[in-house]
Length: 388
Image 1 (cartoon, rainbow, N blue to C red):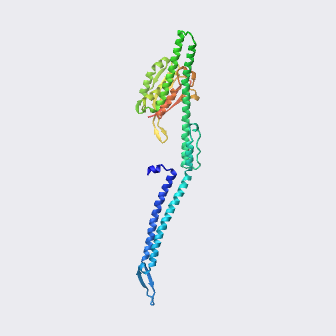
Image 2 (image 1 turned 45 degrees about the vertical axis):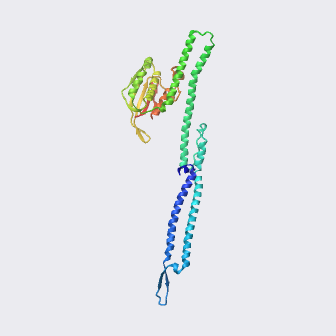
Image 3 (image 1 turned 180 degrees about the vertical axis):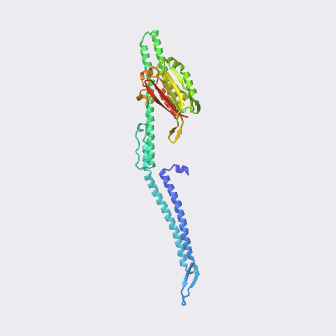
């Protein structure tokens, strides 16, 4: 039965359900009404006939009508059969008419849904920004259309971001390849290259291939963020201590002091991903710091924050530096893939503009947030907020 109804349209299913309900209702009504009517006819079998005599004393006969009036009995039987037959005919006509009416009424009622289906079938990647027309009925179909438009807007935003990301990635990959090709063409024109020329071309190739390798590594990290298991119990203090150990040589070379304040919190997540997020923040704070500056990490729980209908406890991991700061107009853009505040300086430092974007994606996968809390010419403070 399910296989049969599953192949029918919604209009036909509504029609069949209504017809079934009407059939059951009419049959029950017909049964009870016919039973009452037939019982009433049979009660006429016993009746009283009065005959007035001369002394005005009534004489009563209790007799069966089939004996006294045989024609009346035949008429009652015929009437009973006609009643049952006409009752069945009327019941069938009512069921048929109600089914036909239901079919056309449901067709009219489902017309907006049919139009919505046609519009949805015409949606492609190129026209995701075009919203569907919302019916003025303020019913379930209009609310469905509104929800679908919101989904389209999110998809359009995601596709636009993906296109931009792909274009930026292609540009970043093409730039070192173009540099390599240009230098190789210049080198090929020299008839007798000197040892210095070989050293220069080798140094250039090493630098550009290193840049390509670094970029490919970050791109792979970003694509694999969503598939990593996030069920480990992690001490943020221990994680930060490991990051400091791994970046100690970089900080020493830059003459930047690394400071970890007291405080810890245990959270659930991926140690590998959160390590990468904290590593990128601390590395950035070292790179864009002054000689003799400081990078400080402070871990502390926050007050209970109400998120929609639930209250969630969060922990803050704040990375502060005494570096060059971030201009206010760029503070929300620094987590966008391939964005650089100072493009020339970032390239010189080997940056691809993906470090903070990776931080943002990792934190988002842990249901947290990352944002710039403070920034000035005296330094910046970036905080990761994670649910406990």
